[in-house]
Length: 129
Image 1 (cartoon, rainbow, N blue to C red):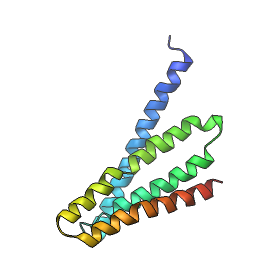
Image 2: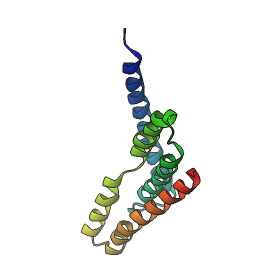
Image 3: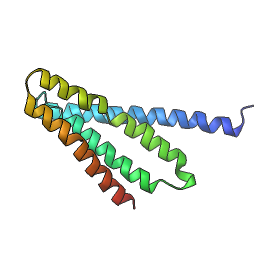
């Protein structure tokens, strides 16, 4: 028989995995919707997903801090926000833009991403307080 201590981490892993998949799907659908309406090579949907993910992370970091919320905290931050945000793409895409001589767009993404993400994290944290 499996002890209670072994079941909780397994269930947590499953829930984190499912939340990560959900975050990934939300990011894809957001990018799909944006590109359908505004076809562009510019990665504003990625910047938006990262900013929203940081806002949720800011809220979760301050709101989900009791001992009962430890598992939910991991599910929201590691799972959903981890699936939703994509900082590897956020900085790979500007490199591709620069390679194609789109210097202004590349620089704007590199500057906008941390500024927006920091602002959204602070806003989420303020909402969580």
